Length: 386
Image 1 (cartoon, rainbow, N blue to C red):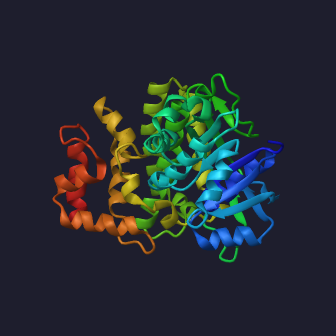
Image 2: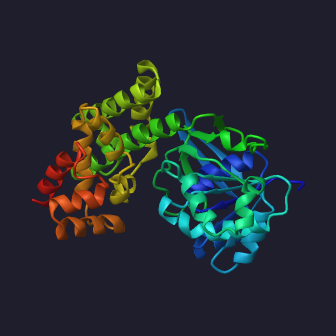
Image 3: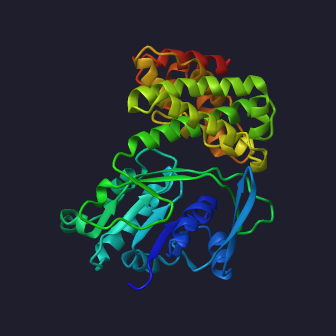
């Protein structure tokens, strides 16, 4: 293959504005795959779009071109061919959609004739997203391909960190995105094979500290500010952070997750504190105009067992450590109900209405009722049920 090729699932803002930007700058032709007619048609009809990075020192714009787009709903065979002849396949579709993109990737792996294995990297806000995707793919593979899977594909988990705020109404394909970024990819699956060359990606031998530090700091802090902001009538995250009471609550919550990260992963207190304050500065940036409902959407996923609140709170509770800030954030997330345009917030209201406090707690958090965190969350559920 003369030019490097990447197939990316998900034509949304993260896909166009973060993943495709990095791939484009690294010399890849990008083939977007999606089932949304509107996005695919727009990409097919437009030869380029603009990514604008927003930072404290102003804005910088880049033109993204050298891409194609395929609607997998109508042209699955084409998608199979593109993946079978690509160097890397990435996705930013949401953790719940991974099972739907797996079958077409499996067909492409079966059909692959290239000497180099395909790199598969999921770019999702979830721990071990590529492992999850791999599991769905393997279910669809023949026994023969399963035996020689390493020669056909390598699956690497990644941790991505970049805030994509609500976009301008008539932006079209153009994307506004935060200047700060972090994209770490697990190096270990590429032993004996060449890892994909992507400028700006940090390949690491142990990804877990990066994933947990990001999820339990950026995502925890961002969502805490958004849920408190929503409950207190704020429109933007930066407005929530300008409220001293909310600002202090976010700091308290992140001091709890910092305590976990420092003791679990051997990151120094000073480094974690610096990281926490950089996150507080980032989410307080008024230029991002980050709407609280955008950040708070999908509350049921965000309240689940391995996610940004229950995940760290459960580990801290097991050690008898303080979790007051995290519990406060959990309560605010439970109150994020019937929000326009967010199906999960409607479903959350339904679960809380139709189940006892105990059953709702088990269903939402995945915690065992004997777990030391369970009774604390159950009390909050009962309080919200009122």
